[in-house]
View 1 (cartoon, rainbow, N blue to C red):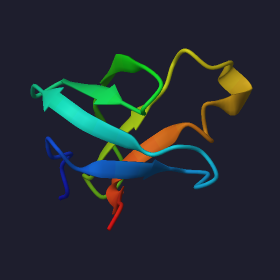
View 2: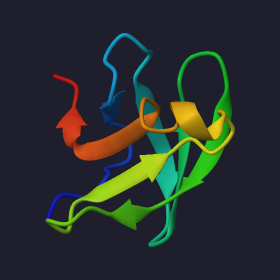
View 3: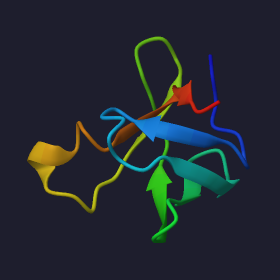
Length: 75
């Protein structure tokens, strides 16, 4: 089971968009920065138990694109 770590960056489901950097976290929420803004997102889990977050400020049909997984850490 992978978790989001403070200070690390993660790519979106569509890597053409800016990655997010985790600035702080609790058990249920992460606060992120993408270089243009800062906001918080609720942590959920995928079928394998890895943490995922979705940017709920985008329209529902785009939310798949703006989903971030703890599996997609940038190098």
